[in-house]
Every structure is written in structure tokens, then in C-alpha cells.
Length: 236
Image (cartoon, rainbow, N blue to C red):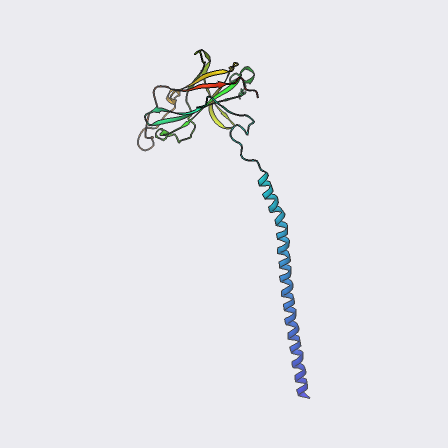
């Protein structure tokens, strides 16, 4: 009798242990299934978002070139509209000439605006080879220059002349002016570049803070853009 009781108790204990193990296994399986379902749901939600981001990136326009972003096109002055000029031994500046439609300025009335002119002409002047000797980085815009301009036709008659002003635009600082040039034709455009020393621009002296060359050029230098095939005023 005692043996049967012991056997029965042992059997019950084994059944309880088996049920407990089964319950633990089922619980673990349920947890794993829930985790897998949650992961699949997250992946499903992320996939459309990733596809949408990729589609938006593909549809995004390329970065606009200078001038295009503001809705205008720069036209080169002559086929050789960019050149290097040596202002001092071993020191060069990059000079480019372009033109486009006449513009208005801020403050209003500071210079003749778009209504009174045919084109806006500008000189882009930056550091070139050896400009670091004067403390300018290659490609850096050179401020405090006085830049005179002259436009002559094939007969040598001057059609426009003056001094550019320093100004800023969507594509950066430059020297420019609105001019009247109503007739299409072939022209030569000249830029005469004076030293910043003439405008009181200083330069450090001494080995500690001064550049390698511690003086500016003394005589103005001239850049000429010949065979400018001008097609007439540019409309906005």
C-alpha cells in the first residue's frame, strides 16, 4: 500500500514537472513568435519609408551653377574670357570677364539701374599662381582693387568706359557695372587693375605675421579681351 502511494506521488510529481516544462516551452515559443512578428512589422513599415526617401533623392534636382539659381545666365566676354595676369614677379591674379542682363542695386539710386542700361558687365578677380606670397589664397576674391573698364569697337572708337564698383550677388563678390551698349558687333574689352594700396589697404610687415612679399604692385596692369562677338542687349 505504501509502495502504491509512493508510486502515485512520484507519477504526479513527474506529470507536474512535465506540464511545467511544456508551459515554459510554450511561453518561450510565444515570446519568440511575438518578437519575430514585431520585427517583421518594423521591417514592413521601414521599407516604404526607405523607398520613398530613395525616390525623393532621385527626383531632387542637381545643384545649380552660379547664376542659374538666380534665374540668369552669364555670357563670356570673348572666347578667351578668363586669363592670368602677373602683377608682380611670381605673383598672378585670375581675371574673368562676363556679362548678362542689367540689374538694379541696393541701396536704390547708388548707381544707374536696369532701366537705363543694356547689360551688366563684371570682372571676377581672384588669387592665382603665387598669390599666397601676398597673403591671398588661390581662388580667393581680391578686394579693395580699383578696376577701370573700356569697350572699343573694331574701328577703335570707345563705346563705354568707367570704373567698376565692388558689389555682391548670388554667386559672390565681384567688380561690376551696368553699361549702355545697344549695338551688336565685335568689340574689345579692357580691364585695368590698380593696386589695393591705392585704396588704403594695408599689409603686415615682419617675419612673424607678414606674407612673403610685403608690398603691393605699383603700376596698374591691363587685361584685354579681344574679339568679343556681342549680340546685343540682354533681356531679363
